[in-house]
Image (cartoon, rainbow, N blue to C red):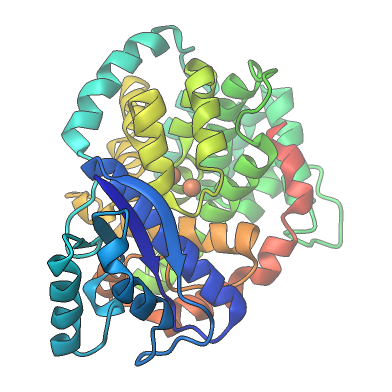
Length: 400
Ligand SMILES: [Fe+2]
Ligand SMILES: [Fe+2]
């Protein structure tokens, strides 16, 4: 069936309007893909449209007798008209000319999880030769989980790996932590960074190293950006978790820094298909678009494949759960708090690094409300981390 998309935003700020329009387009595209509708073009209301004035919609309605399409996709029925009576009248008028109006929001458009899970098992065959985790990761994880271990114990283990030692020192001496004096002792570094952060960094730098070594391919994931995004998500997650739940969580930093590990796996083990994903869904902030493209080209999404590999590596179940549900946190049965925190931090990190400004439209309202937050809270969190984010630049070298 041949359909067109109808897009309208009431935002007065040009950038916010553009973002909302793009988001609606993305959702309409995903909806059409899922329902097998052939989307030929978008009609975007001009800036002068208001709640009670939709010039383009009126034009479409007037021309509906000669239209070449048989359906219109809108983000939600309310976008046609605020008042229900008028809305229903418009839908009926289109119907008279054989044009069906579809709403993205009023019908479910989730990627079928089970379907994705099934296919990801076959991809797992492909990643059978995935290297096992370095021994140091297991040692550090064990040490950190043991309440009796000290900074000295941890320091000794890290000191055995010269690459890791220099990375930890590089990190603690970076502008981000802003210490006036050079720190050259690994134990001091551990005291400053804290066990949780050290564990996350050891884990992620070991894992990222496994993947970056094979990366001499073109047109793939932007690794520099990937690391920065992962690190910022972890920093925001740690902070946000404390603000939300008034306590610390020893796994939050590790879980958050690894949340997108599935993207590295797809890029390295299904490179050609993943190149298509990157080309067709270049903007990571539109998660639905990214997941749909992964499903289409790789037949598996990054949360599914990441989860399977995390399980295969025997990473703690909370890490595997966050990796699996970071785009759909309310599905996490046991670790909803930590998964929801990573969900929010992931988006805040993307808004910071990719958009440079706050927008509520990219959050799922249902999830935000469930956590007990609102737009004001999120925008305050966003503003709060802007300065920290600007100091991340020199941390990129940590993962190299
Ligand atoms: Fe993700
Ligand atoms: Fe992410």
